[in-house]
Length: 442
Image (cartoon, rainbow, N blue to C red; front, side, top):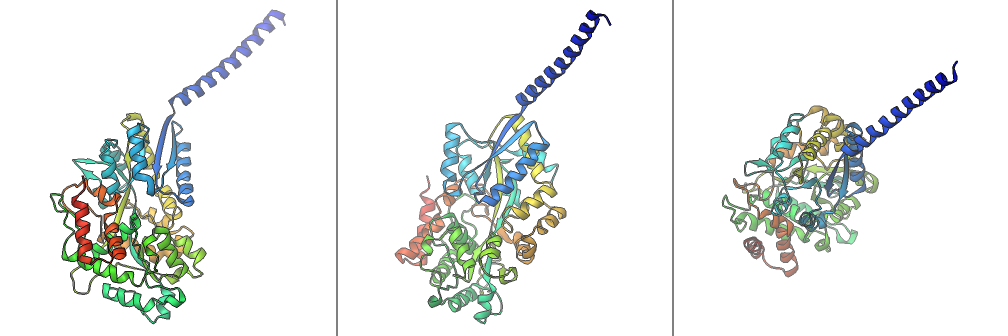
């Protein structure tokens, strides 16, 4: 073969190889340049919840390489101040977890974008339970995309009940007090109830659940004037003051961890709580799944209250107005809420705590098949059964009342409870103080 011909062919071969390598490099650079960075921020700090969310994030990033989602975690204790500071500094995230009152507070910063467009895209892929959407409707817009629900039940130690000769869980508030008194044995370090009488969100949630059960679920009228100073809530605080007598002496420092720990350790026989501690019950109580009882929140025997529990729609606010990012957020939420991914996440993130916000039998089947949750089907089904009888403070009236953000953020119900216990004021004075706090919101 002619040497020049050989050299030309050899050169052509290498030029083709070089062209392919160059094209590959340019394609990679182009793809990387078009990768849209997305950040979600949530307040579910326990490691199991962070790990479960990372599984969802990793699967999303693998399926949609044009996006790169990452998660940030902020504790609830600092959420109000941290997110407000982020917005004010212009370093906010794209997707921010919210509960309804938290949303109203952060919306006032101007950092929350209407989420109607994103929601509608997700709603084409999954069927939402409307009650979870309604908590984020205001001014003809939807302001967050629901992700999971929560509600409170009366959780109790069946072994303690058997030992005390109590044959069934309390159905009335009078039965709660009678059972709590009978179950309180200070010499054994055992108390009938663990009531969080602290200036915390845990206190706010538990106290409001009882306010609702006594008929006081509506804290504003339709003109957003506080309406808490009423006979229903005076009865509720009277009940709570009595219940505190059958609680551990350090309940003034109780938040979620202490309430859960009291039931799991056997220090308390009853709590009002979410089904958030099934792993802990199995690992630390020394008892089996069948020894954990769950019942609806009891009501007054005179018919003045109603079947009720606090219910949260945990959702994600859209914090960016970038259309390309919003498209990515819609894809992420739709991906997360599809039956297989969502059912696995519900069943493993924190078994029993999170309730589905979509209507899908396949999601529920996968959720209930999770290793831990499959042992607590009765308790978790109780949460699903109680969902129609729930509500949320500040969202029971016809109009949107922004000051509910301060009501929750400053733990007004808990402050009133704390004052009643520490200063030994009357329930009537405690309720008057609660309304005074609400009236003085700027």
